Image (cartoon, rainbow, N blue to C red; front, top):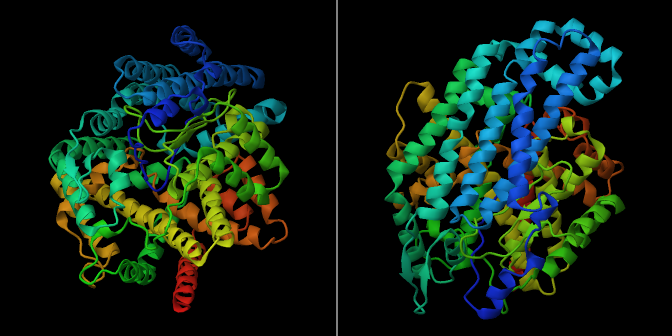
Length: 624
């Protein structure tokens, strides 16, 4: 099971300005997670890994027993599941410890040891799927009928294995594929090490004399600078640094793409996209419908960009570096501490009912978060819920602004989803799809935005929050769909027999940027120097992953609207979907909840929401 859910908008939170009190707060245990809930010490982790490795090495003893009886099949699957659960917990600790400070080599090495265990586990169970197929569907169904526990815990897994028969290799070949998994995981490790730990970030001096080292966190902060000259300087310097490593990042991402194509070819899928969608039984039409509807909605997106240009008072061309400053300025910056985020989060999500609220309070009472940014800490935000018998952990870089508040409720949406799921599902069906997971979190962000608009203390605040609502759609729907279209494009290049380089990726990405942002239509001027942005996106190392943010946002918009209207039964259907975990396919779970994500309707509703937000802004602006 792997439930590491990344923040959708790639909004890396900036480091706080140097100050003694702030530095002390950053290392205050109250703002840091307690990994002792996983293992009491690194030595305890090592001992647990040694045990898990020994247990993994014994799993081959079950080979040849699956077809004997329902009890034998249950015993074998239970033993394998137990080691997977151990490996998940070990992986969580190793990953979280590594992200505490990416400069500490021993922590990075521990993460490699966790990956090595996962590889060994794959090798030692490579015989499993071929043997289940050899037992045959009729006998498997008879075993399930004879053993309710087998059906309850492993029925969905067994059905999935039988469905995958055309893409399953023999035991020897499956062993080779399992052995290769550690190598195939390295592009992400290389990207992370280079982008988080070793990339030499530039230093710039802003118009007020402030000197800033533009690492990822500082870039996220200063790209919002109110002066255009400063924003341009930040973009020129930051992307100039990434451009110098275009070839290296290109080689790394190309290796990721080739690995995914290798898996698709060996397993007899028509393409890498169908391979990636198979585990969720996701119709390819969902992915392609998303891309089609985002492109159909570009006139609305252009309306937003023209509104942005107008509100920022830009007289010449709107530039790509004009995307991040707020369209509305406030006399006093909004400030949301971690305590504020917790209080608002409870208010916002109260519409889900008391069960949800109780779980959120439980999470806030424990040390489940590493909240504040500090030097060496990994950038970004995510929730890791893979330690089934423990609790979710949240990695944040809270900067006391609205963006941080929105990220906070987003990641806690994932965490409560995990709690609901783990309370309801056995471990074996608790691994929910990202497709569903992002609905749980993006719904929170949309509820938050509507809540803040409703509770705004002035017209200026209301306009600000409406602008943030538009930004959420820009970054999560249009931007993420553009990422998804980029992934599809670079894979199709390889599938056509063409070569990929960093330069070629930049060219492809530039074409998409210009189309999405209306370069030819005179809406936004795209400077080719900024087209290296693709190298900045970690999500490309997670397969065809990012499209789920955009599809989930369309679904979240439908759920949010219905919940806020108090439509009968919708809250219950929403919570039921979250509790279902991995007990059914996400597309089918969505349909049971009332939405078909292969049709245009959910996406068109989201575009309509964007137009509605702009209508509200136009009306408020007309009052001046």
